[in-house]
Length: 149
Image (cartoon, rainbow, N blue to C red; front, side, top):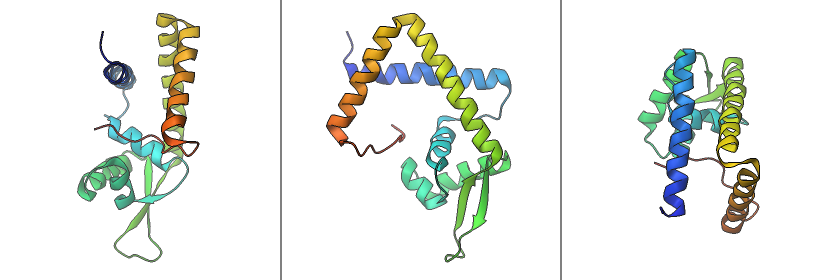
């Protein structure tokens, strides 16, 4: 049997592939996992492209490309930074916030399918165990969702 970290990675990948397959079936823009991390990062705040790049672990140029795509599709808004004329703040638009709600519902559907496959009790045990492990490693100050690339 595979080690737990490999099983977690393969499960995350399988669910992510199903998520993006459903986005394609619906006909949404060609959103990629990197876009999803930006949506989550901007959920409660505005940030600069540099902040987004640091969060994603990519260059400023790569982050700028992602932000440009999201801006072109209407998911984010770029606003002038009040003190740095070279920088811009990036925030989610109404369309971006609506997409985040849609994505949450889609993830919930995939989680329900997982519960059908492994059982509600097993899924609840996994959730509690993973949450306990994260508290063990990070304490109550969780770092939030970050890419694993």
